[in-house]
Length: 268
Image (cartoon, rainbow, N blue to C red; front, side):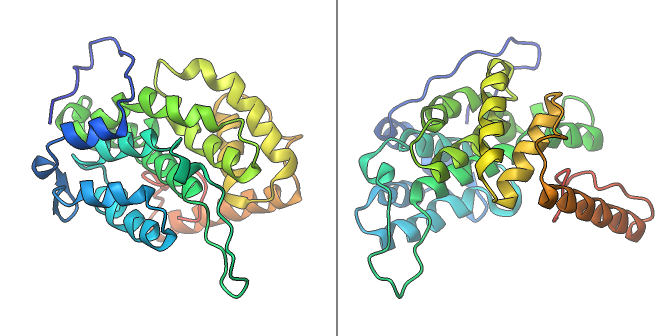
């Protein structure tokens, strides 16, 4: 894997290659995953666009699990993330799926699942995680962790695909895109999108009761300096107070430990 630019270089915009180019130009067998190398990843990634939903669900596990096991970033994580971003507009992926069997609970659309994975992975490489690593291992430690550094450098390319879905007609899809975009725009080239995402966050809060989504956008708005007091409902306040109790309890279990290394809001 090519080493990332040094910390003294200015960030450069990245382009998103076509998915086929990523498959063919990546030496998958040379890239580390949680369970060896990425030799089997091209086959699994190709099946993400299968017309068979059962095959797609299996491919999700086989393609994404090995490169984000235990919230870690591996050498193969970046090309997988770029491939996932590159297929977000694939016709099979963009189709809104609904179960035809009323006896079987419908699965989430694969597009939502891919967006969720991109967002979760971006959070594993966000500024908070980088700061925690530097606090534990010293300033500049990311230069010794090329996979995370490479993912952080790839955020503009990934965001270019996610951004196209922020105005999707289906609320679940545009909300998933928003949650994925929030950690991506920490990149220096993307912070100018904060105002747009803040407006979209307020729109989400006006209609969504999803606890995960509401927590994410409220935390983002606070981090961007917005007053969220008028945006919170009673469930938000109850959740915030519950999280505060969990943090206090965990700190007491660990002799005053404050929870560094975990998200600002539990559950952990």
